[in-house]
Length: 211
Ligand code: SAH
Image 1 (cartoon, rainbow, N blue to C red):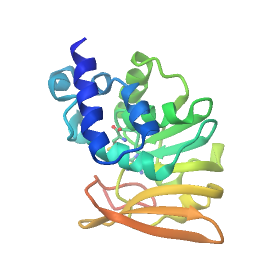
Image 2 (image 1 turned 180 degrees about the horizontal axis):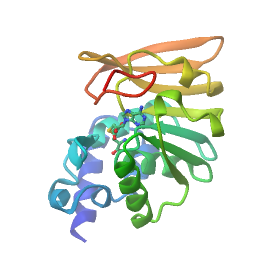
Image 3 (image 1 turned 120 degrees about the vertical axis):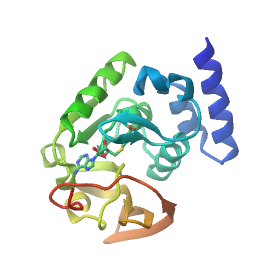
Image 4 (image 1 turned 180 degrees about the vertical axis):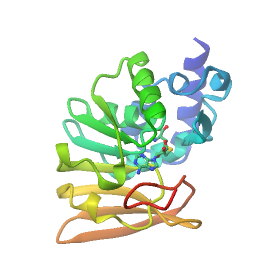
């Protein structure tokens, strides 16, 4: 099938970036075209962001790959994503979590429904999309092994680090205009490592930027 060949091509491009085999394998198993509007299908396996409606975008595949590599999600883990958008990034996390689970919070109700529909089409059953303000995390199911933030926050939010297990990891873009991607590990306090400049839409909500 044409999409499969395109997806294999994308995976080879990502391999050249040094992405780990387990993340490449997870991405090979998620049909990205099912997470974008049909008008964008022809670009679904190109390595850039695409519009998904409501003024939002699905992240570029290399960004999903890099963030998943940093998070080091293992089988059985309970993970959280803030900013579900299309549900694609959560789907890749779900492949890595295997028998574990992904909770994905989305503040735009219409997009939360879009993500649920896409995940269903892709046959992914270990993701729960929750509508609401992810700047407060998702205390109902805390603590988490891993947290991925897919929008840019004003700071490394306490609301999120408080919901991490000991030994847990958080990946979060920080900044309004210039944004830095941070990997935060909860060991003897919080170990914070800057991983390079990125571009994300702002996190809104109570602990986010004003809308
Ligand atoms: N991970 C997505 C792309 C995310 S784009 C994907 O794979 O398609 C960033 C998303 O963060 C947008 O959908 C935006 O609505 C959402 N967002 C922004 N602030 C938020 C908040 N406070 N809580 C939850 N989602 C938020």
